[in-house]
Image (cartoon, rainbow, N blue to C red; front, side, top):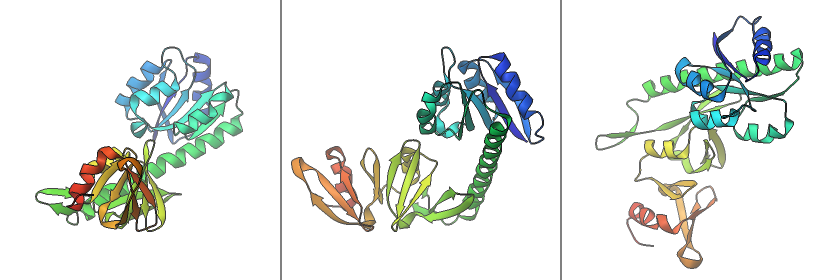
Length: 258
């Protein structure tokens, strides 16, 4: 069952969504909320898989709900709104779909089918990640008593695969996601760069910029630029700028001064 939350400040709108969901045996509407504050509380407490979330609400709107909960911890989101000007911002907030009121039953059914697939794919990915953790428990790179990631799970288009950490050239920040640049390919993972940084061997993976971590072993050249700045040339040909404030960390990883 997909645990579902309906959030809208209009009772009639909530009732309409509940009615449309009532015929789907895979949907379990666990709660309704009439404002953003209540939605935040329910998402945190109810273990929700899917939320139909109104954008325009008093005090805390739909975007405020995502900000408070954190995009990484949000369930699958389908936005509901009567205003089409929010569409771009909705997708920037990683909403799965955007239903413009009034919507037809057919349009709602398409959004629901899309959302259900996303929930099931997320569950599959989490299960694979747990399995990968068990299989790779004895395969993690170790430094002293610390264990670091040896592989990173990547989910895309219904497929689940692993990227070997040593094959990663560099990691680029992408809002609440991270882009893994590995051997000329780019893989998008649903994890912030800061979270990944804590799981990687700091002797190999160095934060060289607010939005970039490099695998120092796959750096082939460092080019000086103006005002003490440098650019790192990676094995895949990428040019990654290094901020002046990160120079000491790079020198420590290299074992020599630049």
